[in-house]
Image (cartoon, rainbow, N blue to C red; front, side):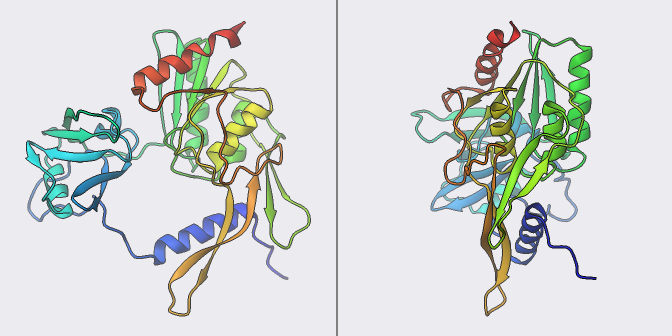
Length: 322
């Protein structure tokens, strides 16, 4: 019996897992604490040394840094009053880590802004989270989804049930800080219902696309706004496009990343891995968004604070309630 060919989703998972496992680990802000010290407190920042700058390349969702509004691309200019210009990456990370509950003072430069921002953050133990939820004063539920890995679909379903119990009048689905995941059929079903076409995988050498359908009962049928950004990529931007295509939501924020390639891994003669594009994953409307992204119905300025962004997104729900 011959093994079944991998679907486009399985190929993507296999390829990325192989590449991550085999590729050298780049410099970043996650180094182990010194022996015999209480350095378990973290801020949720990943850094890279770029010239004299310490540039933030990732912010862990739900972390102290995330809640303070720090974003990728920002530059860390000072730690507890010490300029970082001549600081090594290792030294910076050691200064950022510390006892849980201990404060740290940061100065952040946002490219394009004239003045730096001073922030006081409290170190904490980082607990990975798939979602965050809250209800605004306007009685709008905000559901931030960071990945489509298990058990995220169940958590999203529970959050939507909680919104129903609280009788919110609309939901903002925030996909701006997406990390990845392939449970698109389950997540899409929570907003579209079952048996809706959600993606088509066009693989090289195959005539017919690999069709994927939603597979969960609808958990929220009310007014819906999807908030997108430059980190809304892969299955998250496919979901955003599908919700707009089926008339289930309006989109706001910034254009998405534009990444829908299906990739697999091959090895060079020296054994190092590299990704090879073998196809693309299209939206339910059979649109190829690779390199194009999904353009929101209403564009919001990237300079807005998180609170201002959510307030403006929630305001777009008003016409949908009628």
